[in-house]
Length: 244
Image 1 (cartoon, helix red, strand yellow):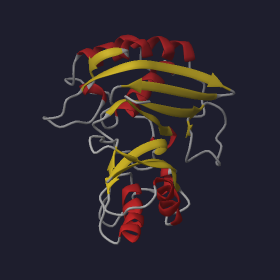
Image 2 (cartoon, rainbow, N blue to C red; image 1 turned 180 degrees about the vertical axis):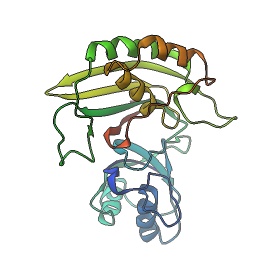
Image 3 (cartoon, rainbow, N blue to C red; image 1 turned 135 degrees about the horizontal axis):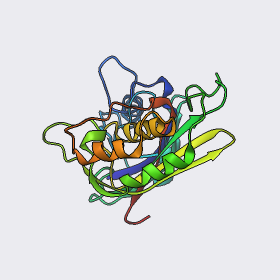
Image 4 (tube, rainbow, N blue to C red; image 1 turned 135 degrees about the vertical axis):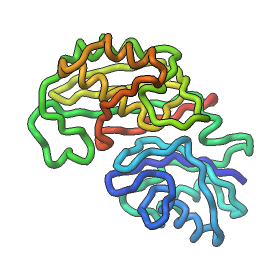
C-alpha cells in the first residue's frame, strides 16, 4: 500500500532533505521512524530535495508499506518518533500510480528577506540583508522570468538535466521591512530560486539592472548568474497535484 504524507520542517539544523552518510537529514530522520513502525527498511520519495538550512511548510513524500494501519493512525505513529523540528501534517493512502515527484504539477516557493536592522531571532528563518532595496525595480525585473524559459544560467545542472521550466508567477511584497518573494512554477532546478532572488536583490540594490538579467537568461547557460541568495530565507511552501 502507498502512503502520501505532508510534512513541515525547520531546515536550520539539517544538512538538507536527501539522506547522506554521517549527516543529519530530513529523509534520514523520517526513514528511521518508519523503520521502527514497519520493522523493516522503508525508502521515502519526496516531491523534491531541499538544501541545507532550507525549510518546508508543505513538503510531500510517499512510501510503500506492508503495515496495515488505519489511515488516520499513520500521522500519529510517525510523529511519535519525530524530532521537534519535523512534523507530519497529514497522511493518507493513495493509489499506486501516485508519485510525490512525478505527479506534481506545480510548486510554490517563498523567500523572506529583512531590510531592517539585524534580528538575531530571525537569522535562521529570514535573510538578514539589513539595507533598503528598490521594490519596484525588482518587481519590474522579475517579469522577465515569467513563462517558459531555459533557466540554465540560474541553476546548477548536469549535461543530462532539462533546464527548461515554466514560471507562472513571481510576486514581491514588502511589509514592515520584510520582503517576501513568491514563485510558482511547474518545477525548479537546484539553486534556481536562490539564483533568481539573488539576481533581483542585485537589481534592487542598483548594482546591476534588468538588462543584465535578460542577457543572462537569453544566454541559456553560457553566462552564469553569480548571485545566490542565502538558504536561510527559503521555504518550500506548497506542492500541487491534479486533484488539488
